[in-house]
Amino acid sequence: MRLLNRSAGRLSRLRRGPLAGLMVLLLGLLFTGSLYAMFSPAQAEGTSKSDEELIQEGRELFLVGCSFCHGQNGEGITSADGQYGPSLVGVGEAAVDFFVGTGRMPLQNPGQQGPAKHPVYDDDEILALSKYVGSLGPGPRIPAKSDYELGLEGDERQEAIVKGGQLFLANCSACHNFEGSGGAMPWGQVAPSLQNTSDKHIYEAMQVGPGNMDNFSDGNIPPEDKAAIIAYLNSLEDNPGYGGFGLGGLGPVSEGMFAWIGGIGGLVAFAYWIAAHTTRSEKKEKKA
Image (cartoon, rainbow, N blue to C red; front, side, top):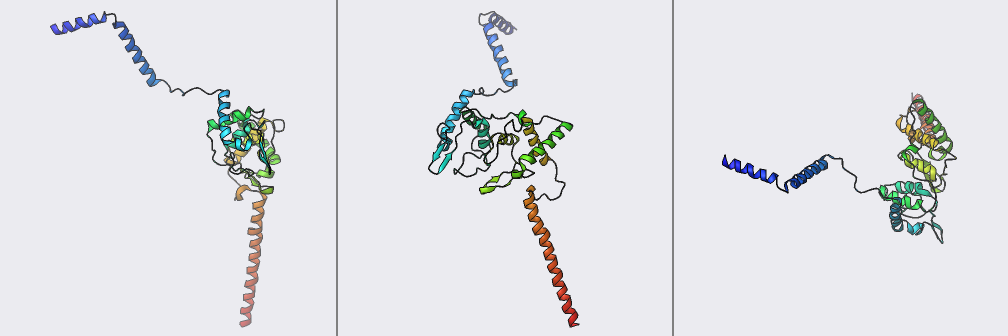
């Protein structure tokens, strides 16, 4: 009992000491901070970069990976054989986001048609390159998600999809076929398939007109009509083909080849079989 009384007295004296309040305050702050660190939502590391920082980062990437063909300031380079790399002044952010985001740039050999492949740069680097090239001159911006999403439901959405199909057949099917499957073009060029292309890149392609493709400004095809065309292409992927074997969706080329080989070729083979069978029957009758 005496030991307990002495201990209690000692604790009582410590509570009344000048450092007791400070210690309690520090322990409370430490306990509160620990609880906040345990249960608070994770914060994003760092802050988003400003446009000036992105432009500077994009210029550094441009000088390393793009200036050999397009010049140190994006002015383009002309060689003795012709245009080595076109000027990028005024092509806009959307052009860089499309070509670099789909892996078409950088090219392995200048002058060839760039096929879609896995991109060399990551998303942050593509954004920085786009911002830098966009700073060289006014041009189409990178579209927002609300630009290429239709944002309609029910009957209104179906009407917009029908309109998008009409616009696609009138302006795009001559090269990309009616299902967006792509096809051969003159001079060894190829119209790529649109079936595995993202909605954003399809929208950007209509803005910038890559390769032999025409660019469709908002005056030619308004943004809501571009979104309707994209919705039509998505509807082709969502709906099954009720017409049977689609033959790749390549249109009259594959259908004509099937008609000649499978149809007419089959009739010729059947006619030859009938003629050969008739000849054998006549020989058997003569022997009898």
